[in-house]
Image (cartoon, rainbow, N blue to C red; front, side, top):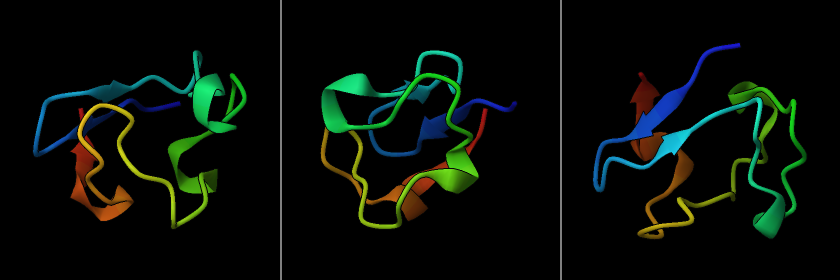
Length: 52
Protein backbone atom coordinates (compact mmCIF):
# COMPACT_ATOMS: atom_id res chain seq x y z
CA UNK A 1 0.00 0.00 0.00
CA UNK A 2 1.17 3.49 -0.84
CA UNK A 3 1.74 6.34 1.59
CA UNK A 4 0.27 9.77 0.89
CA UNK A 5 1.55 13.18 1.98
CA UNK A 6 -0.45 16.28 2.83
CA UNK A 7 0.52 19.02 0.37
CA UNK A 8 -0.32 21.65 3.01
CA UNK A 9 1.64 20.53 6.09
CA UNK A 10 3.69 17.47 5.12
CA UNK A 11 1.82 14.93 7.29
CA UNK A 12 2.32 11.43 5.86
CA UNK A 13 -0.60 9.00 5.93
CA UNK A 14 0.89 5.53 6.41
CA UNK A 15 -1.71 2.86 5.62
CA UNK A 16 0.03 0.36 7.89
CA UNK A 17 -0.61 2.69 10.85
CA UNK A 18 -3.92 4.19 9.70
CA UNK A 19 -5.33 7.08 11.72
CA UNK A 20 -6.96 5.33 14.70
CA UNK A 21 -7.54 8.60 16.57
CA UNK A 22 -9.92 9.58 13.75
CA UNK A 23 -11.55 6.19 13.13
CA UNK A 24 -9.24 4.89 10.37
CA UNK A 25 -8.03 1.40 11.28
CA UNK A 26 -4.47 0.23 10.61
CA UNK A 27 -4.28 -1.47 7.21
CA UNK A 28 -6.75 0.95 5.56
CA UNK A 29 -5.67 1.97 2.07
CA UNK A 30 -5.82 5.71 1.37
CA UNK A 31 -8.38 5.07 -1.38
CA UNK A 32 -10.69 3.45 1.20
CA UNK A 33 -10.70 6.42 3.59
CA UNK A 34 -14.03 8.32 3.52
CA UNK A 35 -14.02 11.46 1.37
CA UNK A 36 -14.88 13.65 4.38
CA UNK A 37 -11.70 12.62 6.25
CA UNK A 38 -9.28 15.50 6.89
CA UNK A 39 -5.59 15.72 7.68
CA UNK A 40 -5.21 15.10 11.43
CA UNK A 41 -2.41 17.68 11.63
CA UNK A 42 -3.80 20.69 9.76
CA UNK A 43 -7.40 19.85 8.78
CA UNK A 44 -6.78 19.93 5.02
CA UNK A 45 -9.28 17.91 2.96
CA UNK A 46 -8.43 14.46 1.59
CA UNK A 47 -7.93 15.88 -1.91
CA UNK A 48 -4.95 17.89 -0.59
CA UNK A 49 -2.88 14.68 -0.42
CA UNK A 50 -0.61 13.23 -3.10
CA UNK A 51 1.40 10.01 -3.34
CA UNK A 52 4.52 10.13 -1.20
